[in-house]
Image (cartoon, rainbow, N blue to C red):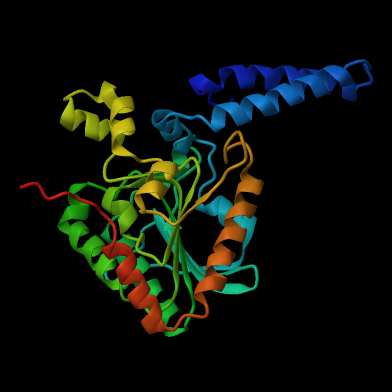
Length: 319
């Protein structure tokens, strides 16, 4: 059964009515075509209106939708010849962060990303998309391999954050993420970053330094979860909606702040309803940026990347 978000209930009721009418029409009960077309128009209008005016907290809910596509879905939809590579050559293989050689259109790339599950068993297997240090070290190993073979890197971000467990801290979680930030800043091949769902804290930044940072319309990108922020500022997680508003975590806000470079618009209704079309839009956008970056020398790439991230953040000096 599909999970219902509060602001989607009316749309889901219309969808159920449409399903019944289409079923009656398919079994020979005539006279429903006009009703079907009327409900279809109404549903399209409602989706466009609702999804073009989501609040930040509603966007958080959509970004976390259990049916929202994860990396494995996008691999099946838009990538070809994916060859997964395992292990960090130091401790083990992290299942929350996967990567390997792949083909996107005619372009050979190194694909790296967080991979949540689609049900309880998969999420446990994937540690809910929260990587341990060996995941970030594996990612860095694959980035260096891409650099060796002069392949562009494409990363997909979708995690609530890096795993905060004791074992991760004992193995140097903070060092692994910091190392990735440093090394990604000077990787001499193009790096495209796509935020597809939740982009949480250092867990996201560990594969988030790129020449182009793209973001799906209904994704979020933040230093902490709204609930975590509310717990700190208000001592009460129920203020998560207010925190989401204040934190500027939506694609629109981050585009205005210069944190991301482009918003990939989702079909009205969200990626969880239209995964194939969303995948196609990601593919076209990523290929466009790869084509733009292909002509740049490694020196020009590094200089451009340095200026990009140095320009982020604004402050006022008060005397």
